[in-house]
Length: 474
Image 1 (cartoon, rainbow, N blue to C red):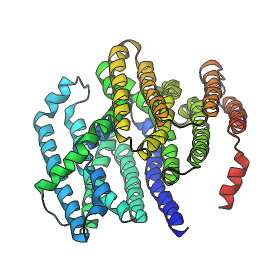
Image 2: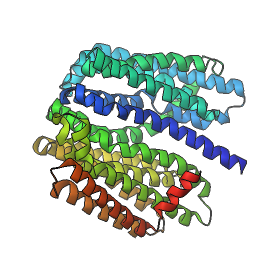
Image 3: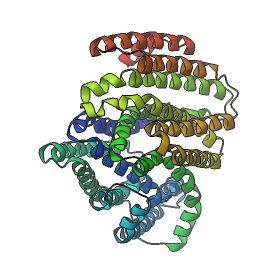
Image 4: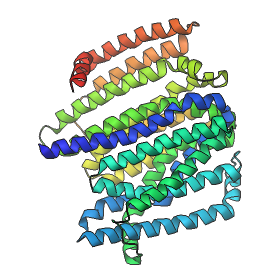
């Protein structure tokens, strides 16, 4: 019982460490849309997507090896040497990557057809990614040492400093897109030094070539799957920059920012139920436990989808300038992919519990192939609608494959019916019914939301009032 409480406590703290920084980033959204043009916002979105992709390439999944083999070390000294060896390799490898970008980066991105100047924008993103790698292994260490509070404090503090510095550089110094990028670079540099200092008593710096070969033999097969997943989720931004323009990229990035709020809460919920899936796996009641978790998860996701899409038009009208108002049109299309990605994450956990780890990588590669091929073929002709729908299609296909491959003998009618009902109300009140007065529109859509939630509660046999009451008591 005590171990279970400790697990739940640590999981909650980790989830807060993930959720709060993302929410802090979203707080700046309505402010930035007043001070940045769609082109500026497009640049920021492109660089953020590039940094996410580079992080996988620059780390080669060595952190996964560290998490798996930390407790297999014979003693504490071996654990310290493992951290030192991995850190030495990763830093050295990324210095080489940094040199490559400084020498050949401009020509490389010209070949990609990027409309964004390499200097100063892209090189800032590359440098930001370089300093960000210093936080990955220390973060893994504190997870292994079961010290979530220290890690959460660091992550939240980093989020707060980033928010404040971004607003200062953008509003006071009028740096526009460069202000957002410089803030990320400065904060990552500062926290690289903090993370290095924090692990001083847990690391013995060394370089063991033989061990690095073992590390790469383990981690490199994981890289294609990780890269494929990120290609699926960010290739649309890269190709919009190539085939359309920065203003389109800014509008698309703005819509994606709102849609991806669903990710924040779904990931937090996932952190909470992930341990229960692994704990229940193999037990007689696993199917019933998983079905309850799945139904509750889908129920919460669909309510989130409804809130974000039904009020997307009013949201942009209130918090942004007129140049961003039409971003609402793409939110429902993008959020299908976010919803599917969350379901994919749920069933991917089951696949992992079944030890079919290669399956997750294979499915990611299939999704990436769909996304890249269809975007290249259709994006120049159909524009942003294509980018939104293709990304969602790829992630939905991935979800269906994982659901099929999980081979769980459970009922799928409730989630399907709930999705159809939510989709009908969204299409009706986002694209068909138009109410000019924003106050009346909010009131009508609030009534629609209430009715839909009641229907979903009936479908999933969930009492929302009971859940709220229990949460308040806790």
